[in-house]
Image (cartoon, rainbow, N blue to C red; front, side, top):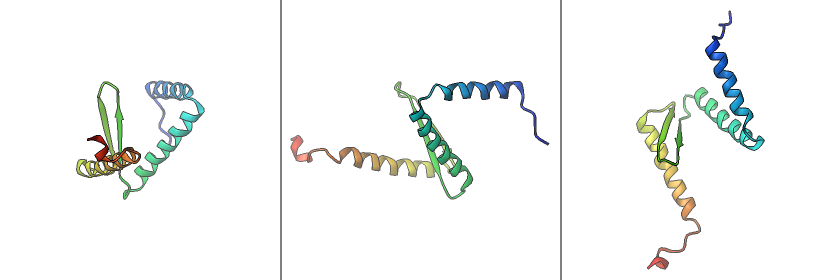
Length: 98
């Protein structure tokens, strides 16, 4: 037997759909890829994930999927290294700064 949705759940779902309708097609496609990755992570116990949502006021929220804080810290350190490498790719040699 299917459980009936409460009025609050229905209202929340409608509000969520209204937000999705405000997105451009490109942003909606990007979000679809993100949701697919999150669902895949939730279904695969060997897959671990960290979602970081930041705001320009320097406030951030961190959500983990299938991992503890130690595993999340490892993932974040790997990602930080990758971003640093990518950002420094075209930088002039450090000798140029002296």
